Length: 248
Image (tube, rainbow, N blue to C red; front, side):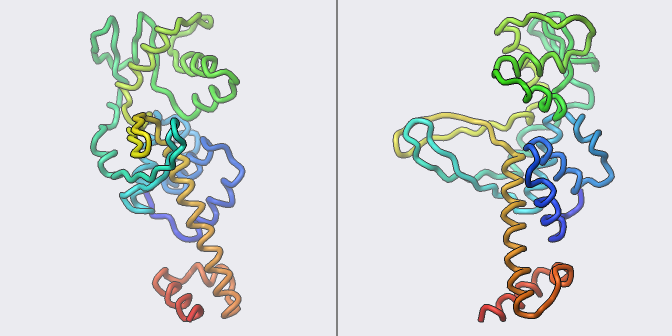
């Protein structure tokens, strides 16, 4: 994974400004992993994608990931901080071959996740994109399950308990596919948990960095008449020093 340059932040922000969140995630990973094709990244299991995004976030913005969340009961805005390295260390990557389970007893077959005689693979970004087209939450879940079925056949009729069991098995097989955070509101005492949208988290960091760079370019261009490429070619310490002199 390469380190993003100042020019990379600006290009990513400009290219991803109007993209769907799922496409932004692939765009960012593509910039950090230029040897991996867009198609290959779209087929990564979600846990692998999320792990790479957390690693990128730690490398670009530091391991302390800071954010805000609103309490669903009293609407109080809470600030939070998590250790990105702890997220990476606490949940191992899924094995190269998906974990299989049937009848409540896990067994590694190297083939698929097997639930009640049906076989599934781990969800990918491509699967989420297809499911996102559905307008109803349950229909989206059904679409995701159908996308991940590995055996051929007609579309099945899924009971709620089956969908829940499949989701649980997939979560066990790919722990980082959904990063859950627990919150405790000091204002009203409400406790809850919700998912960390790591794609949105990374994108907010990229957007903030890009806007800061544009302000720096504007300031130095007005002061010295330099072009954007000249300013971006400066190392960050030199650019900071020039900005300090201009502002002084």
